[in-house]
Length: 209
Length: 158
Image 1 (tube, each protein chain N blue to C red):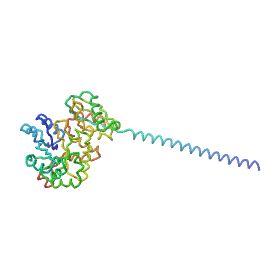
Image 2 (cartoon, rainbow over the protein chains, first blue to last red):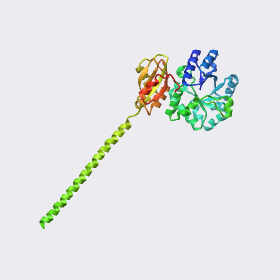
Image 3 (cartoon, helix red, strand yellow):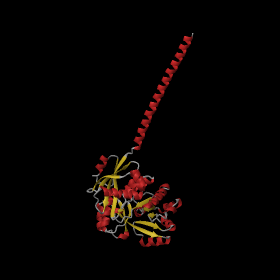
Image 4 (spheres, each protein chain N blue to C red):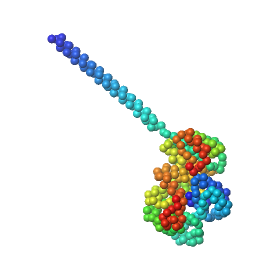
């Protein structure tokens, strides 16, 4: 599953879905802000047997701001939180409505065992936007720190592309070999591309793999 | 009496020289064995120095058509230089041995101990100047013959 893509046009979305299906993805999180979801895309997704989930990225620097955003825009199936501070991270990780909490390069150093444990309360996943590596390959070190933390403390995690076109899509083999070249198990890294479980499944502890 | 003593001395000398010649022969034999062993170990080292090759079949998606092998080679070398530096290029010596512009597929040759690093570096390449590019690894094989077979395989999720 690619949890978050945000193409600019319907043509881009159609080509992106086709490519992702060829790569083996079965679920795609489409950003609500794009407003691209319509019947044609639904027909295309059905023909490709790929399930499109509406996803929303909420950026907040403070817990109050995150709460306000949730009230206003929290209707999407999959909500990804992008905290700007450790307080916002703590709030998002405890709230079950946030399925994925994205870690930025400045935030990764704050994630210790205690902070990671908060995710078990909300039942969410720690997320990493792979587009950061495309924009700046030096962010590979951030991904290495991310992998070392999630594997060390068995934190559930997700990787997503935030692709706006087909050239920003990540093949599962890219993720596999990236993890292998860093010295981690490639198969474990592929868990980051497995589908995100729905709310009830998260509470019961059984995730849709 | 004198003749007997002289005979004994001659016999002793003869025995000494015979024994010494045997000892020298033994030494020569040991030396020969050592030289043979040295040559064998050098051959073994030569075998260990020779690295096994790996052939990576890749699929290219680009907004501008790619035609020549040199173009792909320059894209790959630039990508590896930016990601792993000259050290990685020297260690892995990646080279595109075949590229089909019609199928947008090619075969990249590298070594068995660093093909993972090469693929990881290729995953970070998404643009080259004005050209947007996505390189997808299809299959890694040990022989060129097998790699050629995967050029015709349309499946990307292998």
